[in-house]
Amino acid sequence: MYTSLLERHRRGRKLIEITENLCKGCEICIEFCPLKVFEKSDKLNRKGYYLPVVTDEDLCVGCRLCELLCPEFAIIITNE
Amino acid sequence: MSEPRHRLMDFVREEIMPHRFCSGCGCGTVLNAFTNAVEGLGLDSAEMVCVSGIGCSSWIPSPYFRADTLHTTHGRPIAFATGVKILRPDLTVVVIAGDGDVAGIGGNHLIHAARRNIDLSVFMVNNMIYGMTGGQVAPTTPAGVVTTTTPHSNVEPPFRVADLVVAAGASYVARWTTYHVFPLLESMQNAIKRKGFSFIEIMSQCPENYGRRIGLRTGIDFLKQFKEQALRVEKANGMSEEELKDRIVIGKLCDKERPEYVSELHRITREQVDKLKKEMGGAA
Image (cartoon, rainbow over all chains, first blue to last red; front, side, top):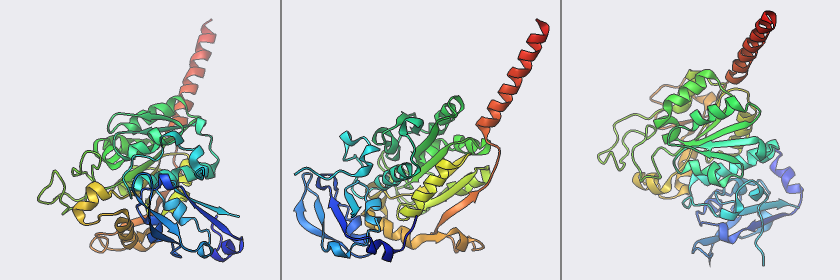
């Protein structure tokens, strides 16, 4: 079940999608991403929460920790 | 532009998302881990019954998880689940409820279900407080915490529920936190697969009604504290009570084989029916 980070990285480009209107701005993804891929933005969603943005998609190794930690199902990681 | 769709939206009731949990609440993470576990096991949700009680965490299966659910009275999810399991042993019965339900008002149901070793998976979301009703002291609240009903700090030591269930005789017992999501997910799969009573205590965060009283205002603060407090059970063995104070022992606490209640019950019933039929046949 657990493949090495390096192997995951070799699998190719990751796609990070954030479902804006599901996010509640808890910032858990920003804090706990091991590679600090996310950053707080000035952009508000429909409910008035500040959304995270992806700073550099190439940093992502696709460990899916953010996807699993997110309480809102708002982050989708796709390994292409 | 249409919004992207999460693959796990097939497992939750998408029409009522986003859910009503507070920002940073651990219940969402537990729902996420649970749906991942169900997806990973390839379970058909039509073959599942989820039972919950009253409280924030009881909203995880009902209404958010897309399966047949029983949203029962306060403290009685295990009692209802026992009934479901006895009548329909072919279904996978999962109880997701809070510490108030499972350890507080329904504590007796818990220990007796563990003693019988009935084939249920009980996931107890322990946020250490009665969060939904405004932060009253729970049996799992640590000593020294100021709550609504203990305004001059709580004097009672907390229940260590997972240890209690081990002692009562459950088949599979584990304790994880919402920070340790990958092992939690794997543990949930093992618990569902396990024949017999399986119990996972999930230490979770309540930033609104518990966190603000102990100075942990956000979900992030809680997760950081869980990370610091967590101690693997292999390392905790042999440590003194004093050293284990303020630590959360995580890991698999017990995994053993014992006769399961429902199959034993049905075996005895069948034997009695066969015996009676034989006697009746002999008389006629």
